[in-house]
Image (cartoon, rainbow, N blue to C red; front, top):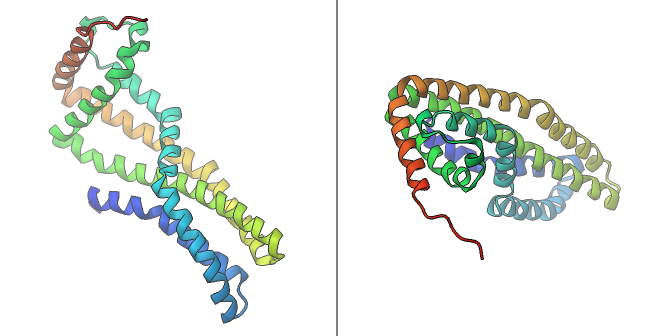
Length: 229
């Protein structure tokens, strides 16, 4: 699977998860063909609307960003800042100031530019994205299945249909398993791949990265300091 195909598949994953939860709900509750029709008319439109809201409002993307910032982002930032030329004498206090916040996007851009410029680094990119796709999908499973489990529990309380109760329990277990086992596993793999990329970059593209980082830091330092009030 190419990176473009992987990216396209990743964008469709939430819809697949919602579709599966919908199908399971209909199967769990329906006893006759008439039940299938009745439940389909209720569950399918609701699930379709929720799926589009989930993707359209970027709910999964926000949860993914929080996960990366909390567990991976700081490690990556420290790795990037460690590649800033030592003679610039960038201090910790300076990195905690606006320089750190403004520079991060530019430094990350240089990271990916360096990856694209080198065949060895580019060859590792697919593994990084493949793991990231599974990692973010595990988060989608946690969020969507957890929400669907709660929704089917409410449906059980309103209708008394035991099939909804059983399905609610199964979906909640899937959500918990994804969060407790798959997410940590893929997070650890993501960190390992980041480490591999940074080590390869120091070996393969250190001069390129150092020069670009130097330009970014000097450019930011040359800007006038804004006055308060």
